Amino acid sequence: MKLFSMEIVYFSALIDTKNANMSRNYFPFFVIILILTLSSCKTTKPVRPMEQYDDFFEEKTSILNIPIRIDAKELQYSLNQQMDGLLYEDDNIKDDNLMVKASKKEDIELEIDSQLVKYKVPLALWIKYDAGITNVQAEGAIALDFKTAFTIQNNWELETTTEIVSFDWIQKPKVKLIGVSLPIGFIADLILNNSKSTITKAIDEQVKANLDLPKVIGDAWKQMHDPLLISPEYNAWLTVNPTDIGMTPLRLDDDKITSTVVVQSKPRVMIGQKPAAQDPFELPDFEYRRDTNEDFEINIQSEITYEEAERIGKMNLVGETFSSGKRAVTIQDLNMYGKGNKLIVSTKMTGSYNGEIYMEGKPVYNAQKNTIDIKDLDFTLDTRNFLYKSASWLLKSTIKNKVQENLDFLLDANMNDLKDQMAKQLENYPITKGITLKGELADLAIQNAYLAQEGIKVFLSISGKLNVDVTGLN
Image (tube, rainbow, N blue to C red):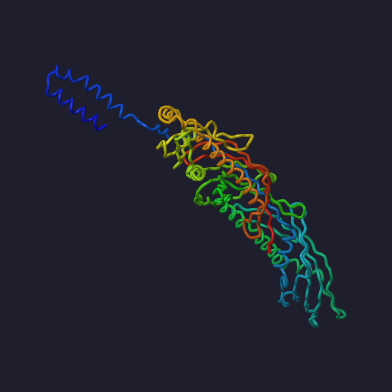
């Protein structure tokens, strides 16, 4: 092109210094030089396709149902461990002529009845009574029946209300002193009144401590914002990305306290570098959700970054040599990007041809293989035209098929591995101490694939069952 510039200057000077007749004599020669110069400037490489993306896909919201089951026996064991020994004491004999000590006699028994948890608390009694002429002592035993109802506040605090339902004397207290009888009815009233302010309060505190919903839900809410490595081999990271959370009313059946946590989310699986942990949104206020079941079906947006796709593609293709007769090329580099709904694969080669060639294909869902294939991968039109003129032998080589095979392998392997890894994680995934997520992955199906600026977005549908077991409350 420098020669072209010099010729223009040269002939401009001739036109300025000579007459018109002389300029006409030089004009044919100028045209020849101009044509030859422009011809020498013609490109000798295929044109790189323009990079562009059509963000027309819509990210779907998923509903994740997580049933929670709390074994009533665990709660009963925990209550017995923490409510032991002396439960209350009245040591002032002057106000009512009585001193009473109440200690747990036997284990607390717990049962579930409709929407209530009921407790039977056996108490051993020691009594000192001012009979006027002397103080007398007696021992006895009484069983108190309690019931507890549950409500959940806006801040996820569990509020319990425990009441005394009835009582039964196991052993009525008696004194051996002739002529002295204990006021049994008054003693029973005294015990019941003391239990309202002591034992009922203790039960409420222990139940609330053992069923610490703000901590359980809060910890789970935070963890759902942290990336979880589900496939080390392919660097696949899962983030749940919750947008809302609620809970069905607590139910009491089959010796279980049950409920279902309902999470609305936009789960994503990114294949590549570990994504940065998102700052969790503030835990939403508690709201009741309608009853549901253990089944779940969620839509996941999986993202394979172009960088990661290139890394795996290079691992299988860079260094590969393709030959035809005496001519051969070796792949030195590989790059990928999007052009509308087409994936562009740029392959840099050295050898009999030095430069880049471009292929394009559309990522589509293959229902038979349940994978994403790059459909109709072929040379771009400009690349094909260039190769016809300059390196037609490359059109007959196996390079296109080799690239096609490796791209299909990349996506197929990731999806199968993702399913296996997620199924393994769901078998027994600890959320926090004593709380474990357990589930079964029934199916993982690919819905569709799109090209975005960040990478290849693959939409998956996952179905199965989930539940949360709460154990070791003590």
